[in-house]
Image 1 (cartoon, rainbow, N blue to C red):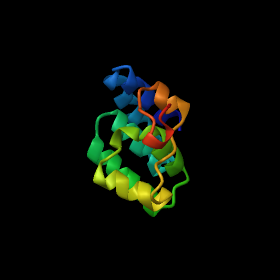
Image 2 (image 1 turned 180 degrees about the vertical axis):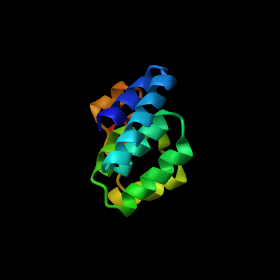
Image 3 (image 1 turned 45 degrees about the horizontal axis):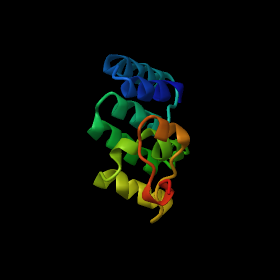
Image 4 (image 1 turned 90 degrees about the vertical axis):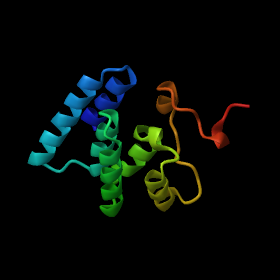
Length: 118
C-alpha cells in the first residue's frame, strides 16, 4: 500500500516520473509476492495509465480484494463518472457514493454531493 499511496501523492504534486517509479517498484514487488490489484490500480492511475487502472480495478473486484475499499474511497476518485469505475463502485456500495476521507479532499477531490458542506 505504501508504494500505491506514494505514487498517488507524487502525482498530486506533479511528479509523474516519481509516480511511475513507485508503480514500477510495486509491480516488481508483485513479481515476488502477492500485491492486491486495488493497489496496482491506484499506482497505475497515478502514473497516468487510466485503462490499466480500470483493468486492475476490475481484477480487484473479481478477486474480492479488500484493498478495493481503500481504492474506491481514496485512491481512484479521479475516475468518478467513468462507466467501468462506476460499475465496480455500484457492485461494492450499491447506489451509495464511495466514501471519501479528509485525505482525499485535501488532495483536491471534491466531496460527494451528499457530503458537501452547507
